[in-house]
Image (tube, rainbow over the protein chains, first blue to last red):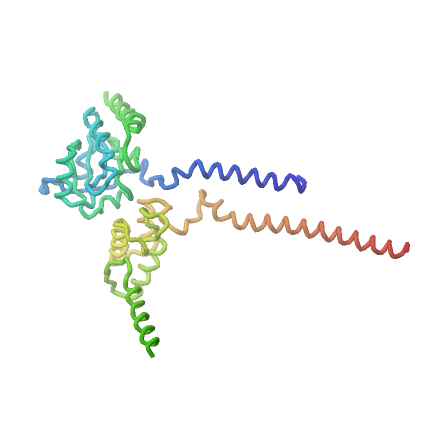
Length: 179
Length: 147
């Protein structure tokens, strides 16, 4: 390597670095969840609209379910809402809505206005459960397998594509296992 | 005199600027606890506004996480336990000072590697130049002798 090729090599290396940087820049704000492939955090929360009834993680063991963190103040949740509704119509998986850091009346009004696709909604008023799930944006969704393990996490809105490629195949696999 | 009065007035406003912080009133039992809280919230990242730490951020999540840190300090957990709590939920990214582990070796070693690389380049350059300088001196000498 002589004095002439060295700067050229350095430049080429820089170009490679910049290309890699550009390609991952879209994903930079998306952090891998440390909870992936780990048991879902325990929760024990009152049902929205029926505070006397509480549901915990144990209540859901044995069947797969999708936890969807949402709130009435969350604009992206409204964008996501039709996608969740479509998934609910398929009737393939339990959808657990987790209404967090929200006002009860606001939450119920939101469901009244846009429709309630959830099998059940739990109220996480102070956001403590959302912290246990490491939620830092809304919406966030967690697919939990029958053993209570988180197998997939979506940061931000679910899309039809994500449902078809990440959620439904896993649900189908669990169903065929059961048979 | 007027100027002094104006300056005094303006200075007194700066006291309000100091009070205008994002922190909610959290009560600490000891000054030491307060110091640890300040230190921890400076070292933990706010996940919503990713270039701010917990101490500076006014995001709802930052409020909640500050409350968590406060509660954990009250129950006597040490700094390591509090950081662990955050890492278990949000990953290493929550720490402004990443731990030294297999996937961060490159990050931690890069400055040292760059320094060593620079030193090597410098050494070879110095060698080359002294060699050239030496040649020049010999040439000069020869020139003198022949002339």
